[in-house]
Structure formats: C-alpha cells, structure tokens
Length: 110
Image 1 (cartoon, one colour):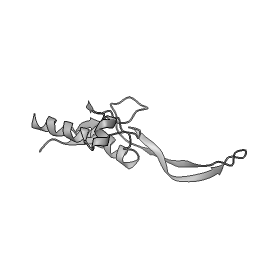
Image 2 (image 1 turned 45 degrees about the vertical axis):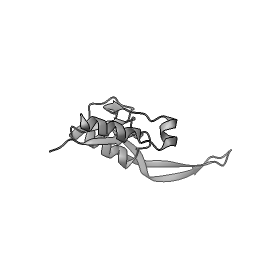
Image 3 (image 1 turned 90 degrees about the horizontal axis):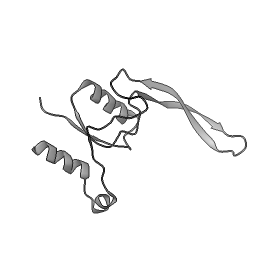
C-alpha cells in the first residue's frame, strides 16, 4: 500500500473537515497545507432555524444538528493540524503557483 497525502486548508470545512478528521485519526496519511477550517471533533450544522433580531431586523440561521466524531489525539478547539504547514503567498496565488502541490511533489520525490 502506498502513501496518502492530503492537501487541506482553512476553506476545508463541514463534510471535508470531518473527512480529514477521520483520515487523520484512522490512517497514517500526511497532511500538508494549513489547519482545516472545520472542527476536528465535529461541528454543528445541517438543519437550522431562522431568527430575526428584533431591533436590527438582521436575519440569522442557527444550526441545530450536532455531528460528533469518534476521534482523539488532538487539542480541542482546532481543526486538523497539518504535518507540514505550507502557506502560499499572495504572489504565489497571483502567479497561479500551487505551493502546496509543489511541496507535496517534492516530498514524494524524496
């Protein structure tokens, strides 16, 4: 069986974050990128109800379904922490450089 590399970051949340938590907990995958945006131990999402604030009339959605994962080994209050923190710069982004992928390919070649 080969190595598994997961590239993830702050915009990985909801089901993607849950997937990362399960993979981190139950495999030897290597995570590259930034901390996952969703919680490591689960989240509250799914069905929700609407509430209109009385003074401002701002409407908010309040999720009511809690998803709890049977995982462990990481500090509460965080998302999956990468094994290799790789953050693209604004210049990388503007030039279309995939910093995380380039790092991963270099890691594989070693």
